Image (tube, rainbow, N blue to C red; front, side):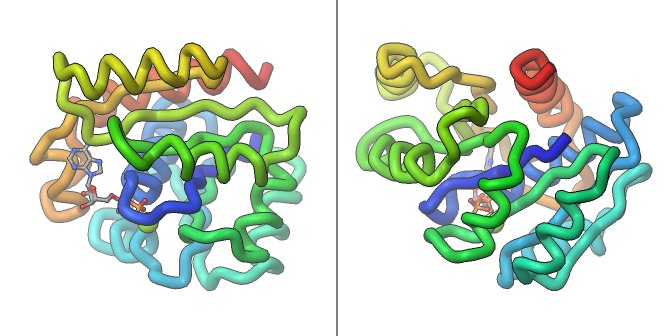
Length: 193
Ligand SMILES: Nc1ncnc2c1ncn2[C@@H]1O[C@H](COP(=O)(O)OP(=O)(O)O)[C@@H](O)[C@H]1O
Ligand SMILES: [Mg+2]
């Protein structure tokens, strides 16, 4: 199973989502789990090095070759963190995805970027958004969920804005983050089986 975490926009929650999802998949016994850092910035690899979690193998050194090789393995659970933009690595990953998770934020200019990502995703591949760093109970969030629902883009998760998640590897994975991303994994799994 290849899960690609992608959005042409940076700073939306791709790396956070990829890291938590891989950790959750390993905890749920979906292994062997590989976490592929396809972003030359290397944020996922840095996170993993600072806080390696059990049952997850990190694959770094982003190139079309490393990414496709990891994704062409016959079994295992592969989570791919991608760089922003529409580069060849992103396209190679999307072409091999069994599901595409598009992290996004509530409000304003975000929908266009999600639509651009959806347009790069082959039509037959299930795709859904995860609203990251969400302020629960705000009109912005409500309007964003309503917008995606109307466009028939599934919302696979709403992850609240939390300091414990923003801290990244420094404090380890947050219990709340694990709980919310477990829900995302369930939703994704139900769409791909
Ligand atoms: N649920 C959350 N609560 C608080 N901060 C978050 C949350 N999710 C992501 N962030 C923060 O948002 C920023 C961008 O997230 P990141 O995962 O690096 O995005 P991307 O990989 O798309 O650039 C980071 O500083 C990250 O810690
Ligand atoms: Mg990133």
